[in-house]
Image 1 (cartoon, rainbow, N blue to C red):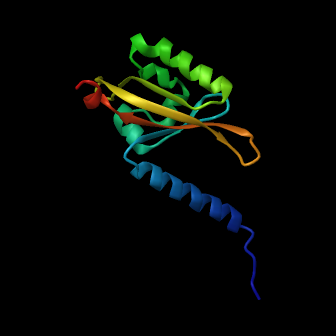
Image 2: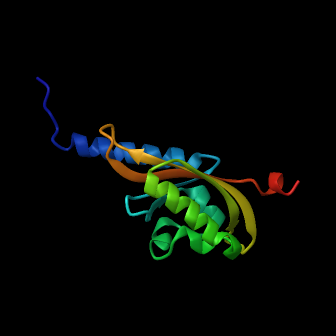
Length: 135
C-alpha cells in the first residue's frame, strides 16, 4: 500500500524553486523577473554581483535607477511600450556596476504567461557587451 504525503506538492514546489535558483545563479548572464505591475521580483546572483543590488533593494527603486542618466528616458519608454503591448523587448544601455563604473549591456525580456495565456510579468537576461561595443 502506498501512503500519500499531503506535503509532497509543497515539497515539489520548494525543490523546483531551489533547482531554478541554482540554475539561474550558475548562468553566465544576469537574469531578472518582474510581476504584472512591472516590479522587479527576482534577480540572480550574477545580477547582484554586477550591480550590488538584490531584488529587495530594487523593490524600493526601479532598475532605471542604475541606468546611465542620459539613457533612462529612452529605456523607460522602450520597455513601457513593450510591457503595455506584452511584446518581447531588446535594449542596449549603460548599466551601473557596484563599483560605480557604467558598462554597456544588452537587455532582453519576454512576457511570462501561464499555459492558458494569463500574464505573469516578464523574464529577461542582461549581458555585458561593453568590450564589444567599444571596439
